[in-house]
Image (cartoon, rainbow, N blue to C red; front, side):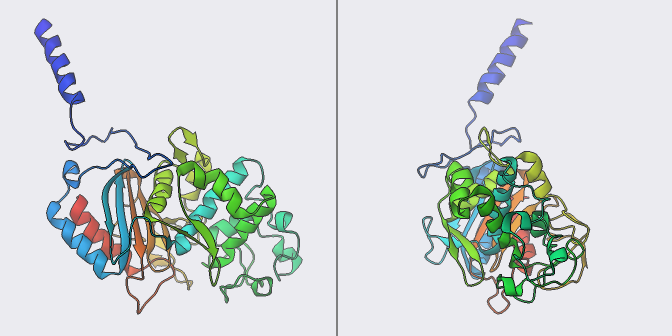
Length: 354
């Protein structure tokens, strides 16, 4: 009996002395970087048993496809962090429509603070006449319709001014990807009695240590930040709105955000794209495509996707966040969100991690 107890004690001591580069455990603690400074824990690909021979082909592909930066986090720790074409860790880059998910998060925070409710009509916050629709049709539109791309507002123009916000369908019966979501920023601003960026900075950006700011793009406000700030938001998303011990975004709201928000396009949540569904739609059309959004990616992946292939991929089953920023992978065929680049990139990633 004594020898057995000694064996257990010795085994525990040996296990506690394992370095971070030894065989990983799925029970490894989640790491969150400090909100100030540049320190960020790392793990080597070899410690995770990744295929070292596939790393360079992945990097070569990223460079070939006009990437500026690429990161992989596992349990919050940096496993890959690459910069291309003169881009650096401190340089800012536009998120494009990947930044829609920042608006989702901020809307959720405003709801949990009792400032708004997503099922309340938008006119309650912006006043009647915020669109050019007949009043009875405008009154059908809630913030939830803006979150789910089902407002029914005509999408012929990307410029979100009142004159362009005309009636096409009743709210809730048609999924169509366009920029009217940005009216949510006005809803949050009105409900909080401050400008959207000030509320966003106080309630989320500063709490997780992001840099960056919103600027007025040609079509709508676009968030710009360095790559690590995008990774910080991805880490918050991996943890269902929790940063260390602070539940910044209500978990039930976050789970709603990454669930099918309607039956028309099940691959869409609250401005998040969802893999693993039976069908999907893409920006700019009404065609329904059968199958997975990104066949090569894990089925449980949810993603923030922006024009020119700005990406945050979140994979809970692997405790993983993947970030890509850069120019369009195919400049001859620029895209608004989803592109064939996603599936090709995941084939390269799978060669490394599987």
